[in-house]
Picture: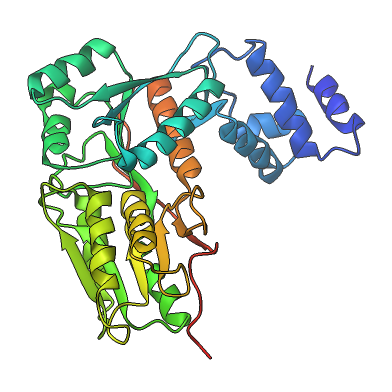
Length: 366
């Protein structure tokens, strides 16, 4: 059998050997020659059976890991993680989906649903209600194997910290709170400095009077993600920077819209020439407010927003976060945990963001 395997692997000279090995092992897994949970032979044994060195064999195994067919366990080897019967059921904790500020939620939900469909999994939305016990009961009754949280305020923090849910893995997408119990919880999101990068981009275009339109994080349910962005703008130390921070009882997009009216009333030589918006709701409100107030975009006002959508004209320049990578990592973590029957590691997985230039920013340099 060993000699047959070697001969088959070496027949296709046009295909790299490590790809042939990966395909051969994949077929064995899909044909249930290695059932789910099976410990593959040791790497040295596999390498010898295929007549290759350990480096080539590891390249083959890496492909299987990326395809979610095997999962490594430190000191124990590689275990088959693919199951014909296993399904991932993931709960998504969110507020009401009504309103313009839900675009970020919808983007994450769409990506979760798309990637779970490939993994034979499905998604359940778990809305936040006023009764914490009711939410906890709903989560337990849903029998979700894991939870995703893309918002983190005190209410959600208390829910995730309750002892009834400590056995359920939770992935926090782009949000974290230092008071969150880190056992069985992980973070997947962007690297720090997203607002600072937006400011740097505008200053390179020659802007000095830069506005920042946001909301008091305490009035936003102690939203720690918003707090981090607010602090990020202050850390830039702009001599002519202007903060416009809203408070409760007014929606985010409405606050941003009214703020743009206020900016338009300022003297041309004193008003900001650009604005940084920490989310789509703020960006949408600023875009509407600028047009209502007679400000031309980008001639009178340059706008740049975090995850700004392309539904506007001119299209808004954005600091784009790799939401697809966030979701892919979260699902991979949950899949490995479900197969091993263990808890997830309390790690931080951080990804690069990028500036996507569209039509809403212009240079002031002569």
